[in-house]
Image (tube, rainbow, N blue to C red; front, side, top):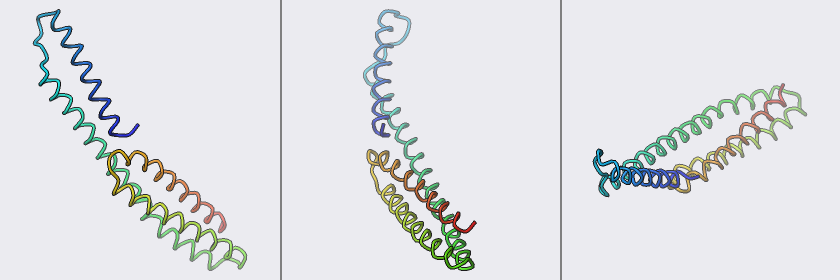
Length: 149
């Protein structure tokens, strides 16, 4: 479910709950009635809160992804240095793995840029692709590193 769908669902749930509460007020008589204005205000507040939460989660995810990409570059450089000191066959295979790793890093970087420019609805869908790109990147790093062990 996308963040916008979640916010809309919360709004409808609140609206239903408030309507049920209003029906009970009519029977009970001891509680103040909920007005249409109350319903609109509280629904808007719930939707705004859901949007703020989603924006915070989006920002945190983007920062985590950027940090992972930033942390990877020194690791790639270390692999390159280790490959140079390895035997010719290992060096050839490791360089091939490093090229694959750099392609995966670039792909993850493109996914991050897509996430940063995506709107609310698209963000939920792109996040799944970004997570997959990070997973592929980690696997490519592990493969390259395993060549040197």
